[in-house]
Image (cartoon, rainbow, N blue to C red):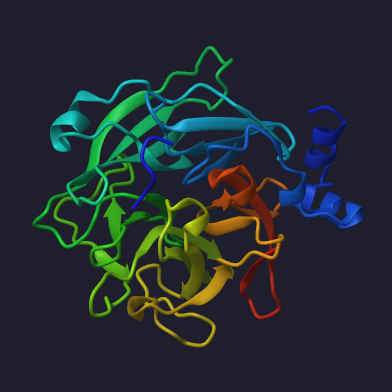
Length: 341
């Protein structure tokens, strides 16, 4: 489950192709080591670029419903105003007792930015995913205004899935999809109406990742993100437990499939429908063991062709605060992604 309530010369270099990953190579430091500014709290982040500015969206906290941060250079981050300060009426009715927006996703679709977000209460699958849209991500633009588009998907206690952690993706045939899920029977995939961004009438979800529960407890899987690349679809999911500060055991695995609906397999052929996959972000980061529980990844395919993964990890030096992390991703000769964190 998700934690509740959470161009200067440098930018000119980034836009001209001397991207942060190259800069890191020349200085001998990782991008993560150079991140500065308002890095915490950041939980369940996703990232997008609009014009010359990068934007991160994440789980809100308190009256800040969906947190925002921005950067011109992908390195120094500044907190901005939340997307909302009041829960929509529909959400309060759909999920009584909810008071936060969790785990958003951001995509530019049909000429508008589309923000999917989750509403729930901790430990329950009476949950819902909503959608808000905007013409721009730039708060200084006269066209900037978030418009809530209401309910997208809802789950109830009678359902076998949990409607949180949305991720929007378009497949090679131009069909639109939303993956989602946390705990219960794992990750589901809904086909969407291309105009509305909501599920097609009577569309049944596909199951694409699941961890069989051991005797005596659950086997957590959540936070899906699907990345099309090289004729495959790569599915990232987070395993084990977030939200426990430095005691979090979160880590992220990846599998791939020729079909967006699966089956997704790790490098070794292990099935994500059986709790398999290949480790992508480890729970034992080698930075003096400072950052724990890396997970809930988002992805940016930048305008210069470079890929980045954004995620949160818990900082042991700041009492386990959920902290923004960003890593360049290279594609290995074997066709699998490697996070340079």
